[in-house]
Length: 438
Ligand SMILES: Cc1ncc(COP(=O)(O)O)c(C=O)c1O
Image (cartoon, rainbow, N blue to C red; front, side, top):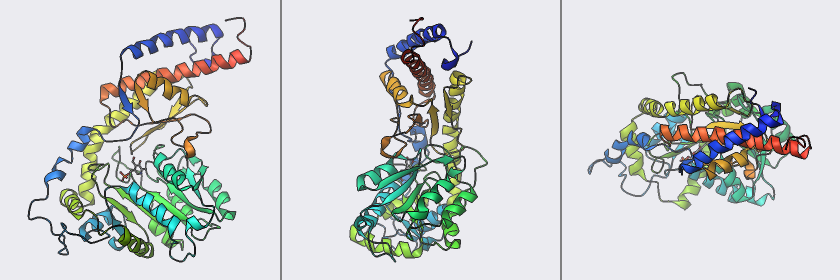
């Protein structure tokens, strides 16, 4: 039987619609309450770091340089935490700053500072320029877009290719427009597409000729060590690439241990040129008398070094890889050959990116919600929440249990088929093609 709605006769389409509607009603009767909206670790993943809670004792509070971590001070983080962060970000400790628990806070605060204060070598802060634009490879991370929207920064969507954002499109945009001040990048296992930027993409971004002399790369390496395979895709070092291209101050790198240890109580890190770091430290001194150094010490005691983190991440992968596999297998079982959707098969990170037929994503998400499965809102992965083709849905497989995931994916596939058929029926109705059959 042909199951692609566009190729079905009106009668076949109506029959299939009735069958699927019955299935859907059975799902509704199960009163499901599943949430697949956000990429958060499941309790078993959090249990992996249980010892983080107790790995300091009552006399263990002194950092390597003698700092009493219980007290105020040390704006940029204790030396051993900066060393660990430098290993993770593949740079030197003097180019690193370790902050509180959230890299998103570091990003938000950097943007607010840029609005209020000029970067070194600049005369005016962004807030004084009238018009500031940021390039947003999309689909992308909704919270990046929220920062821009909150601050009134105009977002320009940029398409993704298989190895990163479309560089030609970026080159054309930044060549003549001085108000384009930067680009958001999630370079490894991108949220939500799963893409890792190729060496060529990294090199071209670092060397990009831009009209704005102060163009910035906001490099959010949130999924740096979050591999799902034993042969992770390498990512070129953007800090070195920018220095070699003659733009040492162009990049701010962010990361955190949120999805390594505890998302609510990790350590966040930022790397940039020494010049930018010293600019930031001056500003930080106004905001705080110092970060939570005991938490930094705890992380160093527990993870020790990059090798310790890599070993730990393998234990995460053992828990979540089967969940990714289950989602992919269920999507394949339910949807392959129907030409109704395509999806990514990520090698790491926290998400699967699914594209429906154009014009269907919002209705699919609404239908799934009406049967008890909450997905990330359609459109959230695009600037201003507007997916121009209304087709992208971000799936977050890590939190639900395996049986819940299976059910959620079966329901999702059902909703995709139902909504696609509804759209096809509507198309035929409005083209008056189906007049004789209804
Ligand atoms: C790309 C990306 N950056 C940052 C974050 C949040 O990081 P943090 O917990 O360090 O604020 C997330 C969380 O989902 C993310 O996907």
